[in-house]
Length: 530
Image 1: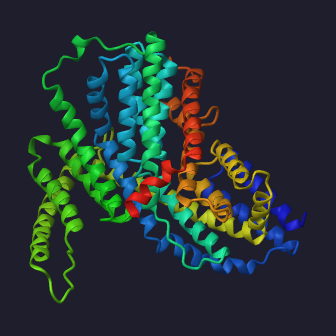
Image 2 (image 1 turned 90 degrees about the horizontal axis):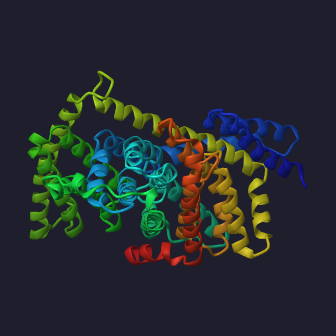
Image 3 (image 1 turned 135 degrees about the vertical axis):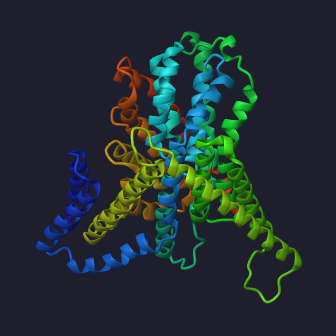
């Protein structure tokens, strides 16, 4: 084997071992790349002039890429919803709705996990929030500690696969670039583009399938082992205005979800534009939650936002035209009026979040939300730069050719290659976060796989579901550590591990179904986007 390929292999192994040591991810990726670039240059197998492409690569991927603008917007949306107590109210309402059934609290956690996934898309925050809110309640009601922990971990990781997921935003951008590279390599210079919206649509059915399987497992356990998930006595659930409380908890986040996802799937907005709608909607929802006694302006502003989305889908609102039909003109005037209502609602919401203090702090809650959004977004983009250095050196050492040769010569053709890539990504998910895997591994393996006549949307959803499974799998699954950090001392680590194993099996069944029936991921994007 040539020295450059040996260096590429050692380089990949070294970065994994260094990350296991707890070193910062971005600096580990960039530092490892620079070290092996120097070693390769010393052996005469790497040309330092390749680094001349780094400024343009960074500018093109991190500065002018409109898709990645959606990342801080979706993060802001998720953090704001988390701070505005939406999860707490949803769990209370769903507990009242399903609590009289055996396994009802487990069903409630699965449903709320799906709603939070579609609202926030932040896995760690969802697991921690539901662990703090629902785990003590489930244990108090006599639920098995292992079943409770497994349910919360599994429901919390739905943010990996149910859109609008940050995983899908980042993965969609990388899959799109890899698909274009693969098509050009086989001589197609005008390929059909793959968008984040395609992955959002492709993930809906697999995501809902997993939610259904989680709920089915809860029902099965309640039937086979009633003592693990007892029902709440009916008299404890007899409260006045139950339906009103349920609607109060459900309607605002569902309207926000429909506005964000609906605008993408209907073709009204790009994911970045929809993320802006979500950020505005979460701010207004927080303002409403912090002072519901005077929510008229915010409700009217929210209605104005929904009307604007509908009008933009039905009418042509462009004003830079020589002739504007009368109905379009009426729609433009109505949209301008709705814009005024939206500004009124936004100003009211901003005042509310500025007046509300963060728990345990004298700063307004908006400061904490913006600070967290900045930290997460900065982490994503710094890792993107570090991964760019690593990938550049890996390719400069011929690592991409080595990967192509290995995957192309595996027994079983494309299915053998897919199996190996999925297994490698699964185990890497124990030590690397989805961001590192998306920016480091996907650009290396995806172009090779996509040359084998594999649907890019299906491949992206398979990768996302695979990463979700590794998030759950003992002993290194990230979701397990999130829950361990907030679980009461009475809950043992063994309880968490035992509880998640059935859900890992459900995830693997879901992966197998998706591999067997690719239409689960490809049918909806085809119908929606033709």
